Image 1 (cartoon, rainbow, N blue to C red):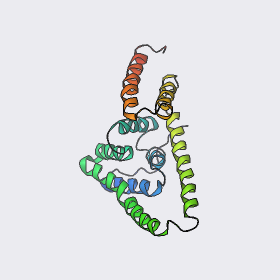
Image 2: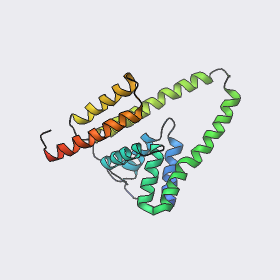
Image 3: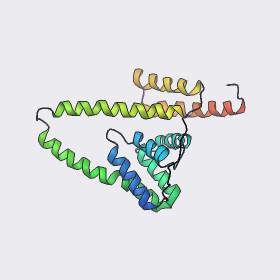
Image 4: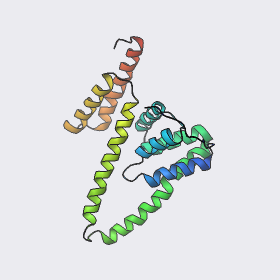
Length: 189
């Protein structure tokens, strides 16, 4: 699968960053990451699949929500501080107002028949979107045994052994860096 840029590329300005990230925030029910990848890589062609995955990995190890970190990194890259602010406000502003309104409605109607079933249905959709985004991100990675082994190790450590995520990341990130450095020195690994 190749990532193709859009037919008519938009110039990247603080306004286009605001609009693009607001669009992601408004479409990203259950998680914005699937839409972020689709819009930034497939629709806009602003980054390729590999760069998106690398920036996402960086965003995940920084403090704060990873999608906000990604928005600020990309906004800053293209338009400096104004771009970072525009991207983050676009991402959080419009969707945040809608969430506040929905929260108020939920507070009022939470015991109404059908509301609990609707919430469970939305949860299933969100899980599917996150899984689909994970599959697309994995497709952009080099085919080797290191990534899946580290992923399984993280899954076992967090889900089975119930170790704190900070400890797991503190151990696996340096290990991943050492393995990647070693593999670049000897391509047989």
